[in-house]
Image 1: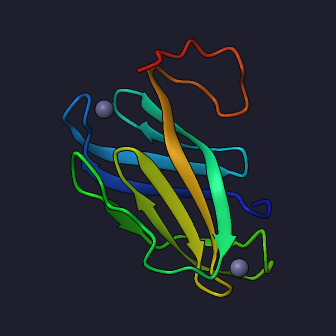
Image 2: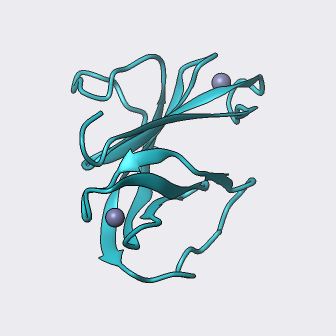
Length: 128
Ligand SMILES: [Zn+2]
Ligand SMILES: [Zn+2]
């Protein structure tokens, strides 16, 4: 696993197919994706800002429950491998290093349905 990369899963009702399925969460420095393992519905988030040390700045504006996950990853800022607080909401996606407080904010960008690899550019996104 490369620095700043996070790969985790969260099992919940998919907003698209409504099946209780693993939602695969992939984070790289350039974007974050949430992909339904059942139907392939994908939400893409792009970086907004990042900052170090602020807490309580998460705004849980959401049309459904905010997911709160605790994946282990290597921090891009302090290069410590440890727990990160990961919040996935409807319009926002936040990852925060518990060791140094480095926080990356992503905002909702687009969604599409279908399998697509995060490294590939040839997806056919449906802009919401
Ligand atoms: Zn689904
Ligand atoms: Zn850190």
